[in-house]
Length: 309
Image 1 (cartoon, rainbow, N blue to C red):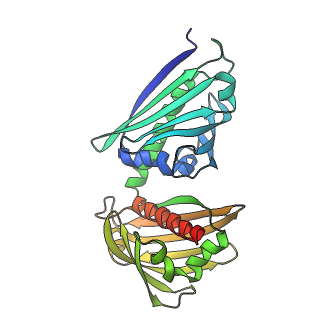
Image 2: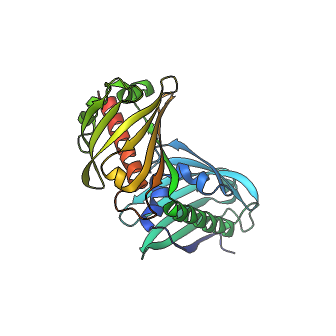
């Protein structure tokens, strides 16, 4: 029996290839919601959720009927070819393998695609005490199908919720203050994304009922929308908005955003939640994924500006 080898699997998916790849590129914190029976937690240990080389995450999952943990470190990212390479280590993996490397590749095909997993391994001995490579291939097959089903269901749903979390280096209170009372400065912080913020009702120190109009670029297109403040919780650094006007009204019956900043030792976590009701299953303009991408982008730009200043 060979101590070193390679195992592969290919799974056809119905979800758009780019949308599936995006889960592993920047949204893996949502995986436990997509695969509740298989993946129980994904915690960020190094780097950020928008995957970069060297980022480390710990997975808690069930395989072979046993709940266990392992870590993955990103070794290579190729966005053009929708490919990420990982080293898998720690926990039972270290007990059973000298090395275990995984490659994820997503290939577009019609409206869906093909997900390919390649596992390259070296065992310490012919007989290992825990799960073998076949179990990891089965695990990859299972959560790939679960994520695919979740994306397809979400796309078809008229009503839903999407979330994103972004680690920040700036002090949490300082970041929250931008949205609380200094948002007129945001276009100077996000020069490529946010082109203007005009006050329509209320004042810049946000209160319930205040309305501002944003001019921004999303999906390569310059657009406008308004936000009305519905709720403020200074203690928990949370603001809730209703988003309306312009293209938003063409695509959504309702679109509500919740912004929350949580302090950490070095900076914090910014969480955006979007609750929506679409006008139809297929909408002509930007979907919620685009709004989540936009939220990620302005969050990172504001954070970088605050750290720099």
